Length: 334
Image (cartoon, rainbow, N blue to C red):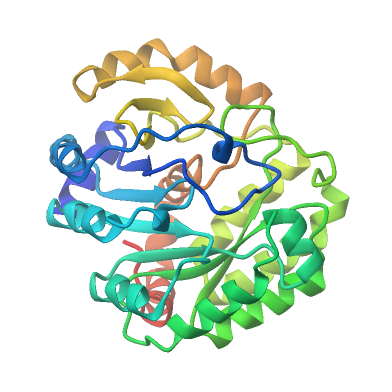
């Protein structure tokens, strides 16, 4: 049922992914984010259930559960269950500080995707990036849940690449993830002065600063993560400053705030709408979103990846046996 809904929405150019900021509460103080400085008006589980049913009816097939730090909500598993019961597959995006073996087992039992942010194995760089000296805690938690070998969702360690990131550190993190049964993925630091993030000049890079990192990840992903290689090609275009295809905002994804307000884009929290008014709202905001894409483009994890995969659907079909093997090895995101 989920796949049929998703395919229909892709054909009709309607979103298939909702990014749900389940809370603004956070236990880290990242320099590229101000979310911890804002108040959080979290919906209760009953209201979230109503939203889940409405999103399923709309045709959404996937949800990113993020924050803040989603594991700070004690009812997170209840939220996961609400989405699953409505045929929407969740991905929990966490900093890993609150992960336990019991939580890992519960996530695995639900075949839920899991992305753990780990920006460095260097203690000083990690502290600078995350605002807390908790690298050992995250490493320990990853190792503890890595013992759960029967997870069916896609479990990944993800790294934000900044000027502080070195190729040697990336190689160490890739090995650490692989040794513990996780996929490894990187994302570029987005330093546009928008609503979803904050510019930190110490983290801002030029293409030459990070070129060898993205070249390395592109090279190894062609062997072990073909879908990621398609995304890394676009990463390289982004950090070079080349013009990008239009982003996914309003076409393939939208945002649900912790208080229950929909917006078309993370960078434009004021572009609010109701699901019943989606088509008109998306049409009215086309010029605004296109201007942003042309002049201040971002590359958040929900901003471009669906569009990249959809544009490369025929290449994906040709390489499907390889992709299927990778899904068996790492877990099936879809």
